[in-house]
Image (tube, rainbow, N blue to C red; front, side):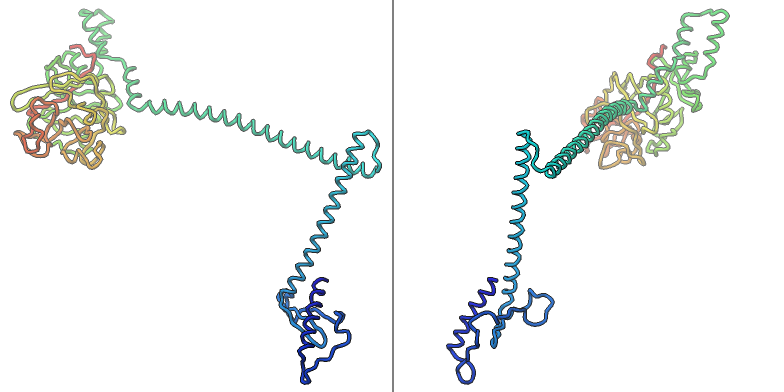
Length: 453
């Protein structure tokens, strides 16, 4: 091997240098016969070790032994691997050349129409071609099958998307139908008995036989509010039993039968400050006070009254100077407790000003009811009901509050009294050091739109 030849050359040079310099006690080193040749040179790893690549490599040249670095062993191994790799590459190159020549011969035979020179080679070529073609056919089948599946999945996804869009549209429609809208639909379907009674009363004075019996039947129906009681001919103010919804029973209300055509069901009244309006959610839900004096009818009852008919709200105000004003709303509705007794009103007219819809930032319409123990207002940093000491449909916080504290004289500081922000002489109240306006009498009452005095 080349490595041995290199070693021989090196050893020859080393031997000549040793011979020239001398060695041993006499100063002369005898030449061993045949020392000039490499026939007696032995290369082997030195010592006992598991990995020959890590062992030092030694050369024995009788009578001289020289130990070489272990890199010589690695160099020899690397050269062996290079030689083996070279032979493998040559074999692959020869095989490729043979395959190319056979393929060219087959193509030439097919083009010329001559039979193949070797039937075994032709058979082998046909087999290879057949396998190749079958492989293509199999691949094409798989691709076509996958395309069919993809088309089916695409159609399914399109159908699913259309169904989702349809369901989403239906869901949006259902979201618009909140409980208030459902109640409004029901209200429109309810027959107005008061209108029928009034019509019969105005067109029939001496109803004979069957008509008289029908009128008597209608008059025996339990009144739903004070307008029904007024239609039956009772024209005096007082407390009466009404049944807006037979499923919820009857309750007492105060009826104003004398002012502005009568038929009014009173919801709230303030006259002397004898009743505190700084109450809990449960109190405002049930109602409190005396119907003959100061009272709050109750949010559940107000809801029942306003859901059976389209109601008008009228607010009467009077200050301690004797000035009077009113605010009238053509539409008034209070939702149930599930919706926190949300207020809905519109169609203002009157002399006191539209304080319930004062501005964009102070608008009590569509606001929830708030009390000292249940915060449903729009003020993010506190409870308007707890701060102003009342239950009301607060915004953030208010431009009107008819349930505030009853002050008998003007007061200073926090505006926690009865308040109507559009009252005629409130312009001087801007500064906290000035006196606040007070009210002597306040009344909230409702009546159906189609009521005929």
